[in-house]
Image 1 (cartoon, rainbow, N blue to C red):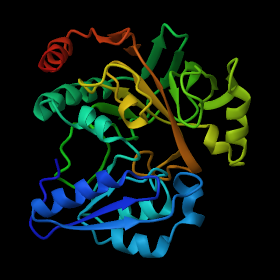
Image 2 (image 1 turned 120 degrees about the vertical axis):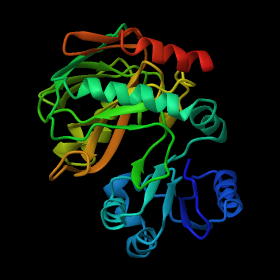
Image 3 (image 1 turned 120 degrees about the horizontal axis):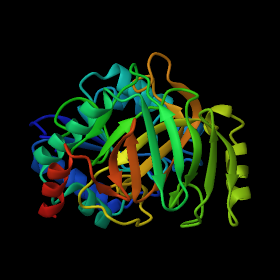
Length: 328
């Protein structure tokens, strides 16, 4: 994964919601690889991202992360998209960053092991190549999801395949990430897993011109509206990114967000803060960020179908997909 070299500094950030067995294992694995590990354990913030800044020793932790070679974020309430994160990613050009958040050991094993990185890379790169000539995306699901958006060719198309050996903003493997054109998303999203909402309540977002215009559902809709309103930030209602999930080991919703975001044939929608790295030149500044997942989707690039109810059906992708799935 990281291909740690002797003497490289590996910073592991954690809080009091992090499983200590995981950070201890990462510490020992770093030492065994010849690296120099440091655990930075900070208070568990009330909210993720920029909204958590008041709870963290920001100057000290930023200074440390700007000197690290590798940063593994295992915080249960994440620094991702905060000023700490943005500064470290901007100023530390050698940094290899990976977020695992509050994933369990069992989930990490499912997400990070048991597949061929080079085969996954070939598959994801092919999807990126198709996206580069795509103008319009539609995503549907039998759960009632039907949403469309346009692409901006100036925004980053990204993927992760499990290779974190070079400087990058890394997340768990098995996805392609798209930043929709501002103001272009319209339709309905029905979530099987929505962060900060009760599990499996299938809340429904009505999207209008790139923003959440309404949250619907028989249970939990009003609570989620109240959660969003606490930020007093209109950008928290705006879509940030759309991840297409293609981790060959993940085939069902588990309630573990990092894992569910990569479910094969599903999608993740992120809302709120978007980094200038992904949405140049200014990004989308927001106080926090949250995600939701839809499983078993049908995805269309312009009028060409890529997946059908979670199964890859595109002629240029099907053989590669079958190889990955057969291996697992």
